[in-house]
Image 1 (cartoon, helix red, strand yellow):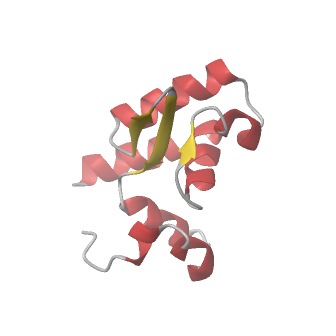
Image 2 (cartoon, helix red, strand yellow):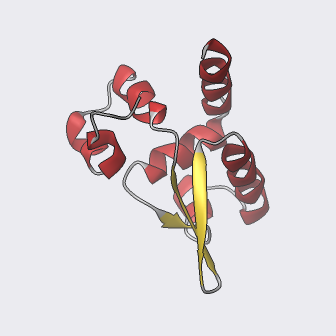
Length: 102
């Protein structure tokens, strides 16, 4: 468990990854939307989306030609709560409302 927590925190310590997860707090997004939202290039964003998915923090699904990303690891909600994000903002992410997330 400690190793998993360290991996999560290390992943979020990189600014682009942090911004990606922060954007996804408001709900799932198409991979094509994320670069503009985090002010990064498509290739940079793609690399970080792959890393976050490989670590089990994000999940993706395909809708036609689009790849839709969302938060998979519900501990993300706890991290952002600890950072002072309001319950209102976190409640936009339906998985953060789930009390049985652990």
